[in-house]
Picture 1: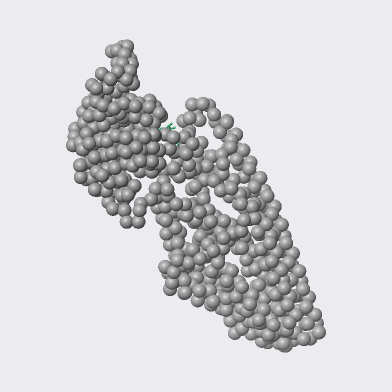
Picture 2: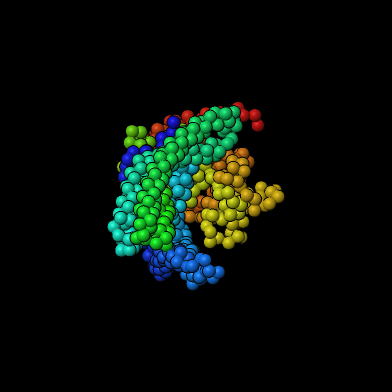
Length: 599
Ligand SMILES: Nc1ncnc2c1ncn2[C@@H]1O[C@H](COP(=O)(O)OP(=O)(O)OP(=O)(O)O)[C@@H](O)[C@H]1O
Ligand SMILES: [Mg+2]
């Protein structure tokens, strides 16, 4: 079973300080927020005024002499009532319209921040991440922010305000009784809601987690579509997915039942309070201490209080959920990249392109060393090849050179500058690569090559495509340069993808070039012509070439032979052959293989 990224933290308290972190997003639109608040006050005043209008309408109707033909309809009051209701709604709408922009902008800002942050995080993070779950967490986090901003300002605060106003009015006009009932029931209601909601948070978290896990599974399975087919594992995948869905279903069930308990409890409190209020009011009317209008007014106020209060329960619940989601998002934002520039890291200055590995040791995990005491240098303009068995650590050298990871011991120097001390961007700008596995954007061939240097003209891009021997292939396509390459470039053949990568490297044309098995997917004829082109391009550039087929690196100035993370031999082709060591053995067996192949 896959481990969940965020373990269920039982009864862990929600971090209310997250609210403070949202304030900067509000301050961007100060005037708008103020206007929205004004509308809010307007709407609340109108809503508190309505029961009064209602009371006077009822009282006037009650006193009117209905035996005469002329019934004195209190027209003005009824119109006032209608207007108050209209203001209440209109102010509310204006408020939403004004504030919508604030939340949208906050979501945009935060979305961008998360995106940039994800790209700043190191490769190790990205190799561990689960794309499906991560995207769900981000989605829930950003919508949580929007919810929180809307409801904190426009729901909790105004509802409390309204409760205070109504309690004040009741106390002032009708004595302690009504105010006490309202106040105590509000307190009971809030207390119960908070308790019950805290108890429920666990179930909400469980649902979210099951949701992320399920999504991770689905995305991972779809990304492996071909593998699933190769092994006839549709049923197996469906079973695993269904197991996750079952967990999700169970979590939802618990969540739903706990919601039922919460809503039921809240309804009970409200029903008791309403009954008590009506009973007291009815008694007062019967004893002549209150008019019918007062009865209606009290009824209206009670309804008016409990409606938003009921909503408050929902909002509190959602806010807790949102806070939990936002917390996940902020946890992600707090994650520090392991590879970071020093505060004022200077730009890398490449004058000649001399690369030096000094006693470099490295491991991905402390319990498994990968590189040990690797030392070599690439002199300006030289071509240095690395050969050796699979898993020896050849590609790891490249990842270290690009500073995807920091060395554990020793250092890597480019023209005398330790790459850990220079700006990462300037470092990567100086190195071009044809990677071992090329992954492309789901875009056109032209765009994919253009990506290497967005400032290049279309002519330059086409020239790079020509130099990479891709032109012929492109011309054979119905859509030519505009052919879409499919997700991750899966619609191209291995060799075609490799040539797109070569075209990219050609277009970038940096002072230092790295080829990691750059021609391994090509037939020997295309390989020959591409190698010639690459040699042409690499002229005057320092280059590091990783290869399995030794014949492709015979001409290198220096060949390093790696075995289990160490350099066991180095020298040029001729001297390595005469040394009769590992390299000579490899060369022998590859020559033999070639001779045995039918021509
Ligand atoms: N991100 C990683 N986390 C843990 N181990 C890794 C990681 N990447 C590579 N390794 C391990 O490091 C070792 C060296 O890998 P590397 O990719 O450098 O080999 P290589 O020499 O390029 O092999 P090949 O010729 O097959 O490409 C391998 O045993 C591999 O399993
Ligand atoms: Mg490799």
